[in-house]
Amino acid sequence: MELVWLCGFAFLAGLVDSLVGGGGLIQLPALFVFLPKEVAVQVATVFGTNKLSSICGTTIAVVQYARRVPIRWASILPATIAAFVFSFLGARAVTAFKTDAFKPVILVLLVAVAVYTYWNKNLGGEHRPKFAANRELLWGVLTGVVIGFYDGFFGPGTGSFLIFIFIGWFGFDFLSASASAKVINFATNLSAVIYFAATDHILYAYALPMGVCNVLGSLVGTRLAILKGNRFIRWFFLAVVGLMIARFGWEIVANGR
Figure 1 (cartoon, rainbow, N blue to C red):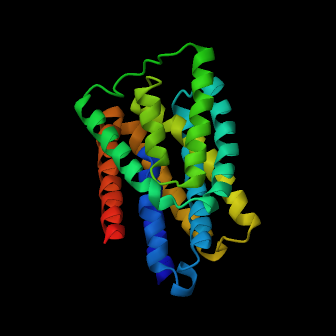
Figure 2 (cartoon, rainbow, N blue to C red):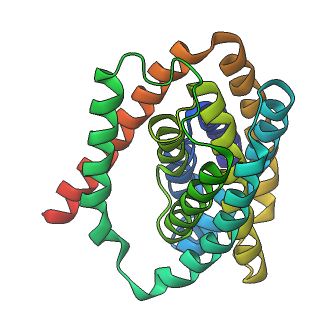
């Protein structure tokens, strides 16, 4: 029965993640709740199972977006390579630090993102890239380095942060930002999957059925994004960021008790 619940949450996670990121906000807690207790206490195994399921949906989202949305591959591919490398380095570095110490910083950043996006009504409404090709490539690689390391090291909100960077800094609209974010997110997920598979931290009996459902959710999500356009994605983005703010706020308060 737990697999049925996990597959349902994987579908929902794939849908949300393909639109604005944040699928881990749904799928990862579900794994901790519904996996057998003796497995759920193995954090690395839970993370590995989550990543394999997630990359299935991310792959489909990349394919769907690439077919229908123009992606600036000249700058996005170098950023993707940088993200792949630094995601792996972040995963290796996580053992040397306590990630809980970073939660208040992430909470502040998420609040700033939400406020800025809400008050700037035209943000992401039009696709007007700000940089010439060379500068966009440079900033793309820097984005891949920072976000890649963050995703490997900590993770939550990676897709949403990427979308905000592509909109606020690069001048993309919400649809193009979502497509670009998925390409980089695929690389960070692939790096993590390789690491977890090599260290035997994936439960394939759960991850593969969940991956199928994540793919189905991703198909629905990308179709919604393409059909509904920027306004729909903007409000969905704000809703997901709001949920992440609530989650981080609750965790900080709970840990402070």
